Amino acid sequence: MAALGIFSTANLNGGQKLAMKYFTVSLALFGAQVLFGMLAGLQYLYPDFLYEVVDFSVNRTLHVNALVVWLLYGFIGGVYWVLEEEAGVPVVGLGLGNLIFWILTSAVVVVVLVYLLVQVGPAEMSTIWLINEGREYIEAPRWADIGIVVSVLTFFFNVVATFSKGKYTGIGGVLVMDLLALFGLYLAGMFYTPNISVDQFWWWWVIHLWVEATWEVLVGCIMAYMLIVTLGVRRKIVETWLYIEVALMFGSGILGLGHHYFWIGTPDYWLTIGGFFSALEPIPLVAMVVHATFDAGVHKLKSTNHPALGWTIAQAFGNFFGAGVWGFMHTLPQINLYTHGTQWSASHGHLAFFGAYSTAVIGFFYLAAQKSRGNVWMSAHFAGNWKWKWAMALLWIGMIGMTMGMLVAGYEQSQIERAIEGSTWMGYFAAQAHPWFVQGMKWRMISGWAFTLGYLLLVWDLLTIGKGETRPSAVHEHAA
Image 1 (cartoon, rainbow, N blue to C red):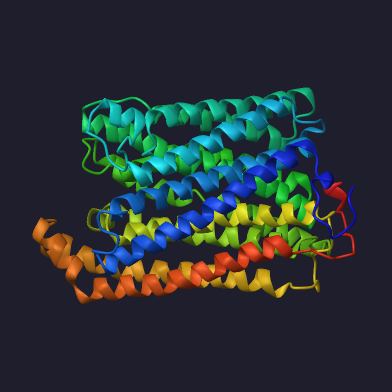
Image 2: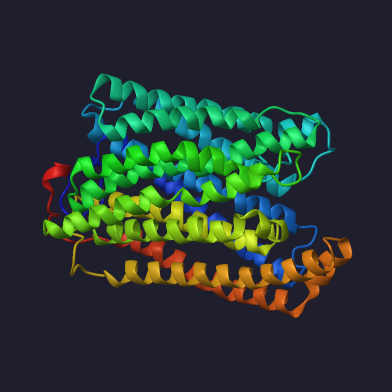
């Protein structure tokens, strides 16, 4: 192990070295998401900005896809980070895992370059295979789709083989079952059909179940590990809530899917069932963090990594308000009839993704930063600890500001475009030109600058935190 306070991968096990590669790309793609989001925000206010250079449709595709991929990289990195410590043996097939990382990253670079330089095709099958599949959120061309499946399958092999060779903990068992679903559900979005209703039905299985069910459980697994390591929480507490999360997934995840079934020919009762059950998704994760924190307080346990724990607690409440409360008030059928596809949807999406997933990945960034410098002291009173606090504050201020700005614009669209104008094209353009919509977009842009500043401070902090620190961190009994 290298000296305390000095960055070195010698401080990490094999799985954690691979995890660091995923974290590095994840952080860079997070920056790309912020960049293209800011450009898209400017195009709302100045529609001619970058017209026919990087159009709004291209910016939005890059913004959304960067979000999905940086979180996916963060999750994969998180699993590789915990794998050896949970299983008790080195990662099986680590060389294959490293090879797949470079292949997947090369594919991501090629897809981004195609989006930027080619942008559109002749609307034939060749376009679907080589340029853009044209399906919102999963626009990646078919060859990249196949590559993602192969990558996830290899990742799945690494995890299953390692736990099978070592030991299965409760976290490990849930993780393996979840990764099987993560791999299988993505296949639902890979077949082509000319029937738009059938296409949308299966598209939602990827968008909702892949993201809102398998991701929720995956985040639950890595957050359970995070609570054990940073707070010394007893394993049986976090694993109990993890099992409840899995049980609820069958109700909140699968039945909650119904709240998306608008205008695609499914029976109306799906809307009510889906609207109710979708609101239950974040409850087990919030309960896990609250219970774990309470238990740690009773036993007078102290955090070994304040930034990681701070982001863990932020995840619990960000998930509850962003995905739960914001989702519930937005996805009830009587409301969603008017709000679906407006800026109200965007406000829910921004707060939910940041609250539920981005926070968890950022927490792991700090865990990695600590151990890569020799597991240095990151509890109270360490040099430069203002940076992570201000980074967190600016990111949250920016996110809440953007959410509120888009909510104001979404209210206006629901009223003008949907309720008064009856969802006509004239109603759409009238709503886009209304002062309330423009004001909402201006506040979104101002808040976006705060978020960008928070991102830059986060990167600076991650590169410097723990540098020169000579005190070792304490290790909790349950994490040892």
